[in-house]
Amino acid sequence: TPIEVGANYVEICAYDRAENETCNGLFVTRVESQPCVNITSTRFTVNSTYELTGNVCPSVSELAVSVDGSPLQTISLNSDLTFNYPLTLSQVGVETSLILTATAADGEAATAEISALWDDSPPLIVISSPNPNTCSREETIELCGRVVDPESGTASLSLNRAPLDLSDQFNEGEQWWEGFCTSVDLTVPQGRDFFEQSITLSGANGAGISAETTVTVIVDRVAPSLLFDPPVYENWYRPDNLGRVELSGQILFSGCSLTPSNPIEVMIESGEVGTLTLETGSRFRFLTAIDDGEYRLNATLNDRAGNRGMSSYDFKVDGEGPNLDLISPALRSVSRDEALTVIIEGEDLGSSVLPNGGLLSDGQ
Image 1 (cartoon, rainbow, N blue to C red):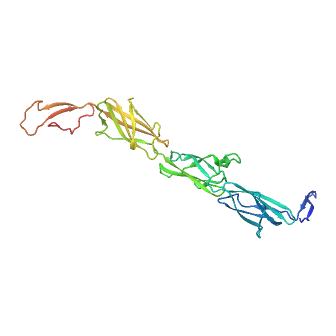
Image 2: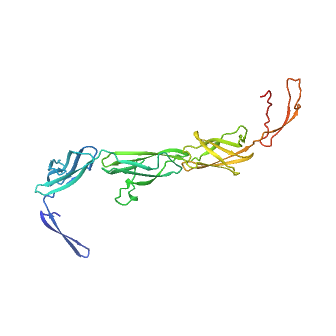
Image 3: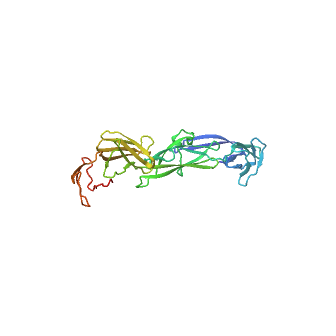
């Protein structure tokens, strides 16, 4: 409906099939020149050069800007009613007030305002959990972190290059990126029980400067175990002069080392106690004072990924040498032969006599 310049009354009516009529009226005042100005540029810039851009309504004949309260400076309008006005900001990290005034031919005016900020620093991105080289046996791990940029704020955030938005988990308007936790699914290769995976948290601030930080997580599903050094003969051990038996060996683990506290629990089934020592090169030594007999040692191992392994080792102790009975020759005898044949009966109730035992002579 065309309207005239000045005050107008417009009546709108509707009819139904029964010829009922309902009307509403409204008053509209048409002005010949209603100016407006819109700012399309962002507030932030990465250097001192800032470009103020926007557009105006057709009625605007003049556009000017005031910088931090300074006198108005005229801005040229493009043919499509847009404008581009470059200026130099004086100090990094300090807001510069820009007030635009758009004036129509009849003197009517409209204003728009923006505070420009020079931000040349990237956002601070922190992964507070997990710690670097954290060990886990699960396919999902909790990631906690924060992104802070006091100048231009956080514009975007990504986790492993995919956009991250947790705004639905926080109160409306809350800056959730300043402290958040989320679950991360680890990519588990098929058939792999041990691998390393990097988790990257990246973000950009309002000025468009980006930063990122990465943490590596070790996924380990292999339980640790003990590999015992074999003795000379089967699993027989001879005590030392103090009646102690030493068992030694290697600690086997795939990637994640043992826990720093109580990594190995060792127990002899019959109740005897001993001392476990962890040595360099993932070696161990277990020293115990026990009588002759057969024993089983059970060990429980815990690694940093939460795997719990069990190892058992059967061993026998014999501290008594074999009994020897000289058959021939007599204990004190004389022989003219170059070779001497000695017949001895040996008996050992513990580890038994070796079938290939020899004779030591001439003091050897």
